[in-house]
Amino acid sequence: MHDVTGDGAFAQASYQVRFDWGRAGLRRLAPCDVVVVVDVLGEAEDAAREVVTGLVPPDVLMLRGGLRNAAAVARACLDEQARRGGRTSIGVVAVGGETRGEARDDAGEARFAVEDLLGAGAVIAALTDLGIDHSSPEAAVACEGFLGLRRALGHLLISSGSGRAIVAADPAALADVHDAARLDADDDPRPLRG
Image 1: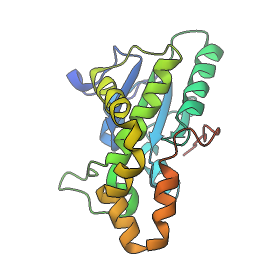
Image 2: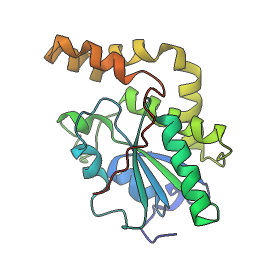
Image 3: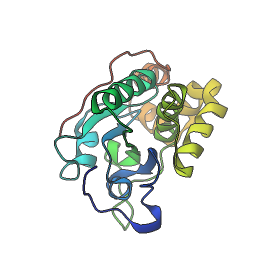
């Protein structure tokens, strides 16, 4: 395990699968052997990299996950666990509204983003399907939220604040938002290095 400062009762260190939001959340999840950054409607990797910059040691596997590649990310986590030869801690970090240049709140944190909660839940559900299921309550709630709403992913992404903002800025982007809701359409676990 790696020494990145946790945050007391909110650290989730006793769980294998953990979930939180943004850079502050990543600090609370530490230490982790694998970090999965979830940015479902973000186009560039810059926002995902910004979340992890300076917080993740070089020997930690970093992946960019979401709805489109949840199963691929889970398989990569399982492969990493096999490579390490022991239980591997996985921090799933939702980027939130900061990916689209939106203003952060007074504390510098990103706003809640429906799409990133669903994407994180999809990754956590895929991990559970592979037997990696010792999840924090935060991760369990994200997982169950996804499982309960997975039939409505397209509608939820289009109707979310982020989806509406993207389509309002560029009506042609409606197809991109629908595409982002396609569960496991991509088999690439999308390694990420800061």
